[in-house]
Length: 221
Image 1 (cartoon, rainbow, N blue to C red):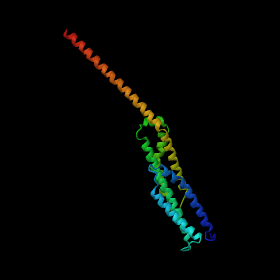
Image 2: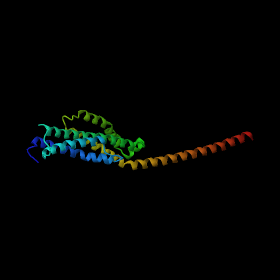
Image 3: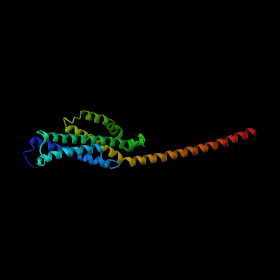
């Protein structure tokens, strides 16, 4: 490789590209494993493919395989790599945020608020509030996103939000067996109370019939 082809600024940007990739790699793999069909987000794959294409253009020039098309060729392609990886990160985080929120909804939709509060005391005062505010925070981050002015701190903020959402989702999922047990016991208690009430109603009806018969007998005697 011709060391004179890449400037210090080019190398610094390639380092940043590597950091961006490593930031989102784990999220991409987690998103694929979390998908019910183990499928990858098509838009993320497109962005990764495009970033690789631009990276290979840089490599081709650096290794002397092809000539630069113009003076800013390498810088333009490195910037394109950064932009596509940045978008891939946001697309993956968007996909994860939707999936996590849907999973939480699916997990809890069959349980009463009372059951949820007993099994997961932190849900209503903490986790529910977090998920309700998540959409707004994500919207604000996406609104500030600017491919022309990549801000890794903004990407990190988004990653932290989604990591917290995943932690809460996993904590809720662990409590599902407890919620099912609470619901089962409540159902058994309700059935027992219903049977007692039905029995008492029958006894009252029988006693009413007996008393009514005795009253009628006394009046007719």
